[in-house]
Every structure is written in structure tokens, then in C-alpha cells.
Amino acid sequence: MFNVRQLSRAVKLDEPLSVQLLLTKELSSMVSTWEEHLGFQQISEDRWRVGTFVYNWLSVDAIPEADRYSEDGELVIPDVIDGRKILGLVDGEYLETDELIARDEVEFGVKDLKLARQFCLSQGWDEITDFEYAWFLMESTVKPKKALSKYKAFKQMAIVRAGSAASMSGFSESELAVYKGKNATQIWVWGTELATECTTVIAGQPTFGEVLQRISRIEGSRVEIDWNTIKGQHLSVSASIVLSCAWSFDEGGKTTSRLMGKIPDSVLLPFLEKVSLDGIQLCKWGDRLLALIEKNGISVDDIETILPRRLASENDLLNSLKRAVVQAEKRAKKERAQQEGLAPFFHAITRLVDNYSFGKSKRYYPGAGYVIPPLGVHSLRLFLTNFVIQHKRLPQGVIEVPYDKQELGKPSAKAFTVDFDQL
Image 1 (tube, rainbow, N blue to C red):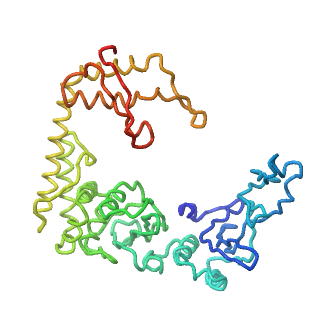
Image 2 (tube, one colour):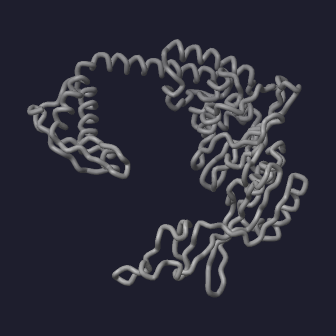
Image 3 (cartoon, one colour):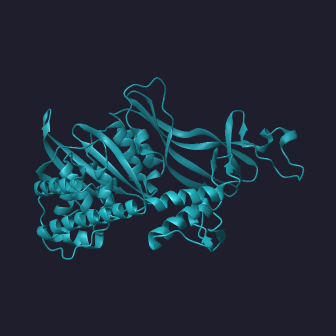
């Protein structure tokens, strides 16, 4: 699937935008199999076209006869012919190029959007699973002011709707939707004064906590929320409020939602179903927690998974979040003290690693264009660091040092011998 953000509506166009392929289906006959694509393109400031496209095929005879076969008699497929990239061989005798050809198409504007949908239906595109999502991408480009909750593609998706009285034009409304696709989850926003936009994409099927973390990091498309107006679709009221905290401008609200996102879904979601949380209160909590975090010189990222001892009320939640911050601060202090006490050893580690790598050949990767240290350097540094932390001294004698999987690119039982007395 293409980058959905490429479909944002253009104000002015000097030339048509490239065709965006939204859906693909495979067709076949008695003698051939091919793919057709649903394509969408903006051709002027207020005109678009939608069509059924195929990639153009060329006969293998398009390859110059002298270059057509190898010495072994095998067909040689070129990368380019007449300026067109060759995608591959199809049906054993044709070359598929990157040239898109419209088999059928229709041009339309804002007022005749129905014509585009009728075309899609007549071409059988509605029989493809993701058609409604593809239609949403087209319609939201042409009419970016339509609410997300009005689209069929979002009927089964989690949506938060909130009002805001801080708008320049008075009261406005906004929506945040979590669209879960096959391979990724997308966070969409819409508002009375915001065009429909996909703000972020999360690979796979993230947890509710991971969604909270990602929404809290969105830079733009935030809103001033009227906490009395929040409504949720396929979400509990409290879950809607927590998502709104992550979405809002309020730093305290974002802090609380990020911390709550560190509680496992199996614990957090049932809790949100039972309690009635207050958005303003969560923001106030966040202010206090953020002050505690900054005072202790840590960040939210330093806080690990939160496992509440008990979670049955708002007080239990607040106490769990406070406890997690305090524990993170203690871990940070311990790590700093440990690093300060072991500082002389870490200088020695650098010296030992430099002695080990001296005279050994560095590895150069032409494709990547960079030089990396000799094999074993990364693993040796990791081994020495762990050894010093555990034993409070440097290793001695001859030791088998295991290769780290990051250095080899995969887990391995291989090791190499190092005489630390000689280093």
C-alpha cells in the first residue's frame, strides 16, 4: 500500500500528480494471467480521475536479438528498454514494464463524486476486501472536511470525538481514529478546521499501550479538548478519555497517558471498562508526575512495564504510576553510581579493545559505503563490559569470548579465543 500521506489535497498543480494504485486484483483467461489495479490521480486543482490500470507488456522481441540470450541459451531480461523499467517476465513470453495504461477510467470533480463510486462498482472493485478503505482515501482527498466516523471503512474502528471551544471561529469538533489494517495500524485525525490526515503508521497490530505511546508523540494535528464533549466509538468512556489525553496539547495529559500505556493491556483495558476517569484530573496528575520525573533527572522512557499491585480505583492507578516513577529514579541512581565507580575499568576496556583490533583488517562494504571494525571487536567490548559489571575487575588469562548475534547477524554458538594477559 502506498504512503497514504501522498493523497493530501493539492492547492495548485502545474502538472498532474502521479497515479496512486489503491487496490490490485488478479484475473485470468484460458491462456494468460494478469493483474489489474485501481488507480487514482489528481489532474488539476479541482479535477481527479479514477481508473482500472494495467502495466504495459512488451514482446520479448523488443530485446535486441544480439542481447536476447546468454551463452547458455537462457533469456536475458534487461533492466530497462526504451527508458521503461522492466518489472519481470510474464506468461513466459512478455516483459512487464513500469508503464501504466488505463483500460477504463472516468474523470470527476467534487460535485460528481458519485460518478467515481459508480465507476468503481461497475468495474467490480467493491468485491475486493479493502475497497471501502480505498474509497475513503479517494473521497477524503476530494472532500477533506468529511468526518472519519461518516465513512464505512471506519464503522468498526476505534474513534474518539471531542469538541473544542478554543477555536478561532468558535466551537469546533475533531476526531481521532485508530484504523487497524492487515499489516499496519494507522492513526487518522479530522477536524472542523483540520483536513483529514494520517499522522502516523505503526507496523503490525500494536497494543492499546503502544497506540497511546505513539499518539502522545505526534507533533502536529493536536487539539484543545473540551473534556465534557468526549465520545467514543468501539471504546469505553475512560479509554476514550485516556486516548484524548495522549492527543491533547496538555503535557500533563500526555505524560499520564504515556505512563498508563506501560501497563499491560490485560490489566489496563478491564480497568478502563469498570472505572469512570476524569480527563481534567488525569492532566493534573500528569503535571505532578512530570514534575517528579524531571526533578529526579529521568524520562518517561526510563520507566519499564508497570505492574500495579492493585488496580480497582483512580487512587490505585495514581499510586501505581507514582511508584513506577520512584522505582525508575532508584534504578537510574544505582546505574549512575555503578558507572561512576567503574569508570576506570571502562577506560581499560577501551584500551584492551584497541589493542585487540590493532593490526587486524577492517571490513569495507562497498554497497553500504562504510567501514566497520574487525570481526570480534563488538563482541569483545560487550563481553568486557558485562564481565566488569559482574566481577568488578578485568578478566585474566585465556578465555573463549562468544560472538554476539548482532555482530554475526544471527544467533551463533561460535566463539573466539582471547589471551587477556597478552592484551
